[in-house]
Image (cartoon, rainbow, N blue to C red):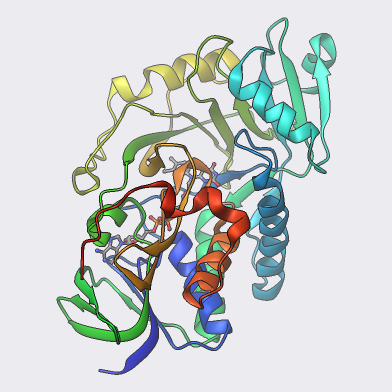
Amino acid sequence: MSRYDVIIIGAGTWGGSTAWQLAERGHKVLAIDAFTPPHDHGSHAGATRLARQSNSTGPEYVALTQKAFEAWKSIGERTGTEVLVTTGNVFVGAPGSKWFDNTLENLKASPFEHEIFTGEDARARFPRLRIADGELAVWEPNGGVSLVQPSLRAMQQLGREAGVEVRYGEKVLDWSASDSEVVVRTAAGEYRADRLVVTAGAFSNKVLGLDFPTRVERQVLANFRVDPEGPRLPSIYIAAPPGDDSAPSYGCPEPDGTFKFSVVGKGNIIDPDTLSQDVTDADLDRVLSIVRDRIPEIQGDPVSTTVCMWTESEDGHWLLGRHPASDRVVLGAGCNGRGFRYAPVIGSILADLTEGIDHPELSRFDLSRYELERSHT
Ligand SMILES: Cc1cc2nc3c(=O)[nH]c(=O)nc-3n(C[C@H](O)[C@H](O)[C@H](O)COP(=O)(O)OP(=O)(O)OC[C@H]3O[C@@H](n4cnc5c(N)ncnc54)[C@H](O)[C@@H]3O)c2cc1C
């Protein structure tokens, strides 16, 4: 078996990005995935992801957002692929709502273009939405929608052109790291490299042999018919009312002309190996009540649904760093519900870490915030 500079376990959103960027930097890369990405068994299931510029989480995301939007533009141009559609993004909420206030405050302090509408102006500007008295609608003209499959395929294309080798349909069963190398085992064989990157999404804890305080949450996306003649709906976030700390509900137009809508399933903690694809009435109750209230033209049942899962860390920030048991192993985990639009930047950070380049300015994402068992050697 040939020997590699870097092996990547998990060639989905983050792994595909990391593999391509390491190969372009001249490394011999092998990317292994249990399935053939894009697929419906992990965190990138479905056709779209919202790509807004605002964030509710902190000012350190501003520079990352700028880089990510530039990177997607470059990926689109280099591959001749439409990866991000600019639909604009609107978020709606009442002052006093924690998520809404944080998002607006961060946006005001950022360089990102936005406009604030209130009362009748808001209703006139967004006639397809129900905006309650006292709520504001904040418009981000440069927000949009990431197209999942074209995005993953574009990064794979760049990876292929730079020499990434892939083994799809090979689940990694085990790996080990010594002072001189890493060894990765699948049912098909054993692979050796100088370095390892683990980007196994919801399966990261299992693959890493670590017990990060993260939770894997099952999420359900529902697609609805909307008026095909109406003005294009933007991507939308609806904040929970003041006093209710629930995450916002969100939706966006999809390439097939439907409108996707979802309510963040915070309590739906699962073992990723037992993800149920069966969508029940209970899964859809809140989605239906919010979407029918907020987008009045939607009163029917969904025309399709998708089940997906993401991983939330305790503090809501990604986990990007080196394995506590071996400097040869870099990991990217805790993708949460905003990891898609940042994928090119995260890939670049993980490639840097693999090359020994640290990012002290990104300490918020460092693993040192957790005390972890030094296992897996
Ligand atoms: C419902 C939902 C809505 C979302 N909405 C948004 C949004 O609006 N905006 C946004 O920016 N982000 C959003 N996200 C988040 C975004 O989709 C994820 O952050 C991103 O896809 C995470 O990528 P990942 O590489 O961590 O995981 P994945 O893309 O799932 O990749 C992990 C890969 O590892 C492989 N793997 C796992 N175990 C093994 C093993 N043992 N051996 C080999 N391979 C293995 C898997 O097969 C998989 O391909 C959403 C996520 C979900 C679930």
